[in-house]
Image 1: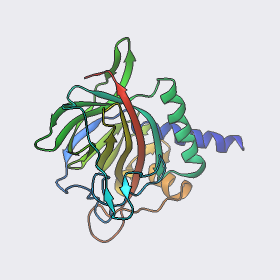
Image 2: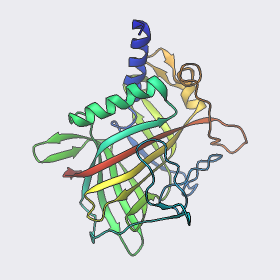
Image 3: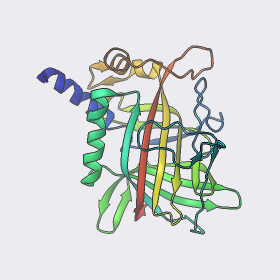
Image 4: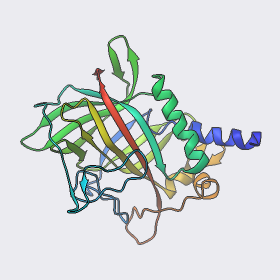
Length: 267
């Protein structure tokens, strides 16, 4: 492989790594409702629809004969205070091919050596109301588990059986020193997943959001490459989301799948 091309791919990977671990979440609620990226039929997996699985495993909980989703059951009466750490993370859209391989290999290797930590912490669980509140953010490993770093945010989720999904999409502003300005603003972000009965593992995790063309044009990588150029000219990813509802696609959909395992997490 040509050295210049290798360096270019490495730069792309370095930039993209800031998407999740920084996790500076801006709790800006959009009011657009569940599964509502305008112009894009995204639906969180707790809904009774057939899942769209692209990477990270299949949707084994869907009854293909009836189209209904098995929401499972939780044997844990209250999730409050319980924590989880991502033990796998796969970016599936829009960075694909060799670029996607570099990024996902980084996730795999650095999750394995404990240098890449994305954490969830349940802060409220109301079974009667069917709601779950989760803190989500980056963290560091300590002697007694993992500590959530500054900048974590709160997800208000619906909880049905063992499944959860963001009840209202939020905006994620991911700080990243490689970028100018030093953040990546994703809009209409939704997170969903499926707990094992004992809540020891979390599977079928999915994080979806949109990067607008306007924001991509204002964002540079290493104060040089424009993000919009990376996506259109290098990755050749077409915009597939209409954020403003005017009939024209004006954003890229980013999709991550993940799994997580129970961990001691402090806020």
